[in-house]
Length: 476
Ligand code: AMP
Ligand code: ZN
Image 1: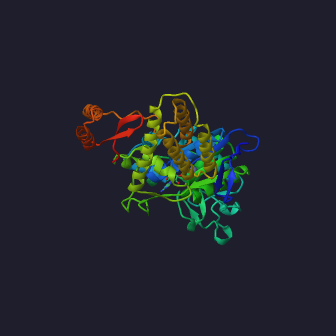
Image 2 (image 1 turned 90 degrees about the horizontal axis):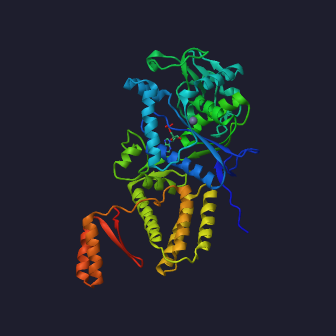
Image 3 (image 1 turned 135 degrees about the vertical axis):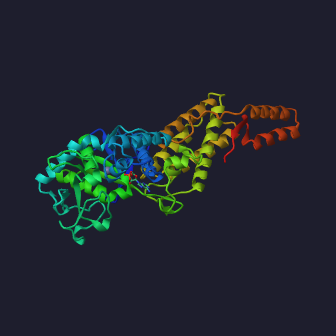
């Protein structure tokens, strides 16, 4: 009997691996992922988190669980407003530039579109409604400056996600933060609604029962998640920097409003470092995805680099790492071409190895998305099949089934070069290749070597195999 393999994922809140399922009585899993702040092109750190969320999404579906995923665009906050004012554009025109760029970048990284993208500015009435509820319940209050704050002492389990103890923190109404982002050291009442400040906000504001102004960042996600997925959701994901204060505040707001458990399962991915250091503009190691593509690196190479490192470990982004990704992808590419070249024979003898590899792959994924173990199973598989190819034991039928299996695992990885066309070979290279073939047939080795050297000098390689020879582009 086949072993049942489940998807188990680490829950940041319980600090345990737990099985992922829809809520009891539900058939679809509801997942909310904090999206980009659209004030600039997203950087390679952001995309580590977004590739991880894509892997999670694909794994959930691979395990046969129906899914609805929401990703928001933070298109109103301190940074987007400052950016729009600086460029003298209205907020929507300014943020749309970066929303569109983000959707383009997702395609480059083979990230699947989610079911619902939600822009915060389309949900202001829902945010206002939540703030009104919190005011009515006495969990929020109006500060002297007209800003509305969340009173964290009214929510006794505040801090439970990031494991802060309120008792250790001297919190009180005198401690308040009105910026969207702050550190753990400044745990305090946080802002829900910022009253209009002409100098800071230009002409960007919304009317509300509490006067003109705009929402704080944290209430945005609470309102969108509740409106689009209901008061209780199954999985909520973000980068580790989102855990405090953003997700902590989301719990306080949502549960303060609805009285229901907001999220069953919290997940956070660790940060990306560049050459071992925190990425920052001042350190000169800050890169958008577009900066890296300009260096001739492909989206798939970046995606592969991201997938290899477990999401709860910091990922070090280096040129050597990218070169290793390129090399690994070219091993897959060679293998795929080799299989595609086999056409003869209708015996099938690969069923057992496919099934064994599938089990290993699934088991590794099910264990908190252990992709490096899943990839190791695939490389063992490639080695074994290559050995059988050398012995001419792989038939056309085998190769078809093996390719179907690679398609299957690629539903999760999204990175295998299965659909790539053969590289366009320039005419002079092709001619030299045919010349070499003819020289080899005539056992004219010197001339054959001469042709091969010419091909190499132009950056191409000849691969000889029992099925014949082919040209491919050399790795750089
Ligand atoms: P932001 O656009 O700043 O709201 O961030 C979008 C997503 O990227 C959030 O889930 C962040 O937690 C995540 N993020 C930000 N910086 C990094 C980084 N260096 N490494 C990984 N994820 C990050
Ligand atoms: Zn969020």
